[in-house]
Image (cartoon, rainbow, N blue to C red):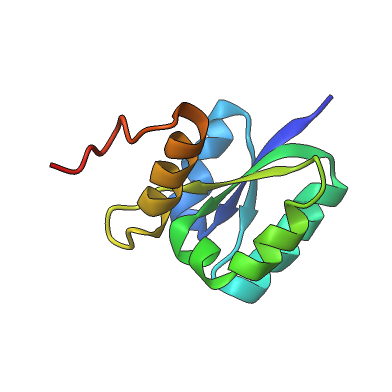
Length: 104
């Protein structure tokens, strides 16, 4: 059975444990990359990562995402804007239009 993992600072990702996700504590990009690789080797089908860490690991995430699994998804954060931009691009790619953020 596949698992779902969440990578990020403990204070930001610990709540996901209550939902049954595997939590990987990572306070910096080096720890996050190690956690992503560990999640992949442990059979996670989906790995969520905080936007701040994802922004520092764009190339590495692209390499890890080249395989079918795991799907690496950025958790949007209002402060950084990185996750929101990723979400916007994903929606536009899937739907063909910006239906969430609609630039006025």
